[in-house]
Amino acid sequence: MDGLSNVLREVRLTGAVYFDVHAGAPWVASTPGSAMVCAGVMPEFVHVIAFHIMLDGRGWVQLADESQPAVCLDPGDAVIVARGDGHSIASEQGKHTMANAELYRRPTNATLPFVLSEFGGNGERARFVCGFLGCDVRPYNPVTEALPRLLHVRRASAAGLLTFDLMRIALEETQNPRAGGETILAKTSELMFLHAVPQYIASLPPESTGWLAALRDKQVSAVLRAMHARPAEPWTLDALGSEVGLSRTALAERFSAVMGIPAMQYLNSWRLQ
Image (cartoon, rainbow, N blue to C red; front, side, top):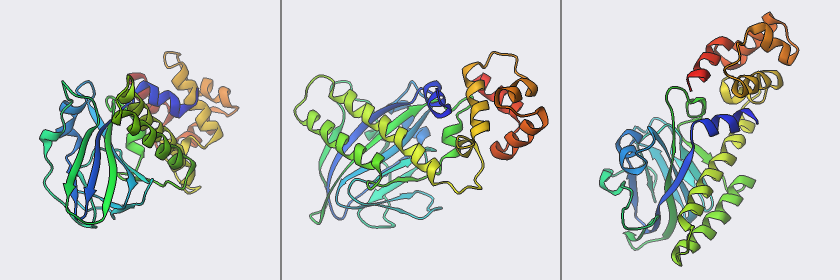
């Protein structure tokens, strides 16, 4: 199993689509931070990753603290808010509103997603879905730590096209409810994430370092696979080096240069996970 798949399995990535929004401009919706919504949305997890997929029209996504440029979503685009930051999605750039935390509750007598069909004004129409991916971040989740706070997934990519088509099919299922519709939406959101992360890895500059960049390095990624597959083994630098044809010193230098931390430190963190 490759390093990314192994980690995503161990951190229990689980998706859910919460809102199917049909809006008229001007419109704005805000999502509170992960800490506020996690207990109501996915209480079995300690962290939720928010995402939005624009099906029709256009929208702007911006972090609540405006510390980064807003992301413009065209039809079929998605954005992933990997670190659980509070944020807004709106018909106009720079628009914010107070988040209504009461909306973020798992229904006891209804299926997901909630459909919001009278939202906003009477202007240009838009449709988008909003959801969450629950996962573990403690004691260690290298994926969420390595991703940008706003990850833009464009429809023009193969991953974007696939997500767009699958999401539309799944939403049609929920309009004429049949068994499994909510699960289809959940798995589609997970698939969107699984496609988006490798796409982001491929876009990193050659000089990039860190956990995601390490997955492109043939020898470091092989060491990661060995650690992940057999964490209980009494690994030493010599033993790990022999796995990839490097000396103890060469492995130590290469791993630290690419990952930013020593190999044994990473191994200890992974064992805790």
